[in-house]
Image (cartoon, rainbow, N blue to C red; front, side, top):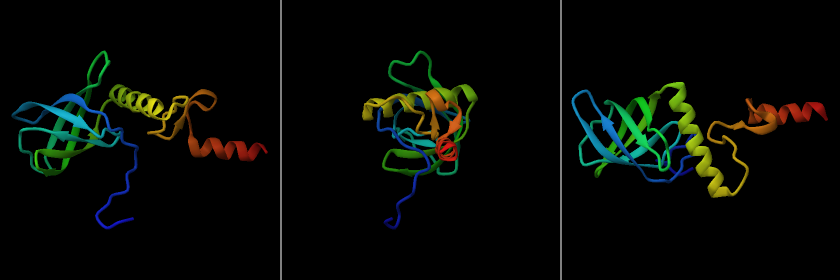
Length: 141
């Protein structure tokens, strides 16, 4: 791996969404890119300080209601963009975000939807981590 590169824990989807970012004193509209279950990249006209905590609201295309990330921390800022790491969100928001990412990954790969971002298998292996599902199959053989 090249120096300066970060190994990502979750798959990112490169889709643009509308959103807003809220601090203790301000709320501003933004564009959200590179969404994952762990964070995203945000383009904003406002300046933010790395280490600050924010709330992020994402309006996904075709979504019925926005996804509210209750708490995120700004990890970096450069040239009108910030990187945020998700620190806290409700179970419902986590589910919404996972379904959104799952649907985009399925579209991109033209395959049966799997919640790959979490590494969980749907269908026959619902609720079983992907690595355990494979171990179960090996044990049966």
